[in-house]
Image (cartoon, rainbow, N blue to C red; front, side):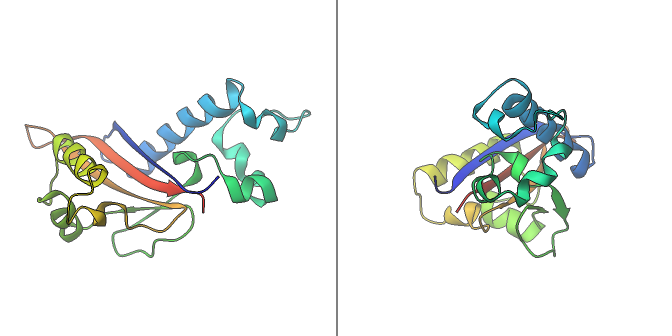
Length: 159
């Protein structure tokens, strides 16, 4: 199927792992609980009920090479200095944020503008999607009052 890019803007209360877990569970329910093409991978004796049930499937040759092409495919939060690897989500550094959004504290509008610049292939926008396949980046997004009420996650699944 190839690689798929995805992005999400989610509620944020200061805990990246909690925000990631919430959106992963929601996407899991959309993909697996509500009946989809993945139904044949669910063991009949123990149907999936949470995103944690997928752990054994990552070893499956079909699922492990295909994934879901959503945020479900990443689960390990690493810090800004961490190494982008399979299934990781890395918080952008302030330096990277300035490079991508023009500010260390981007807003939702900054994030959306950067996405549009990338889609339009504007020069200098390519850094936004330079993460390796099967990984993602994230950045809290500031509101007008300076608070971070949302967080952006974006990444690639597939090969």
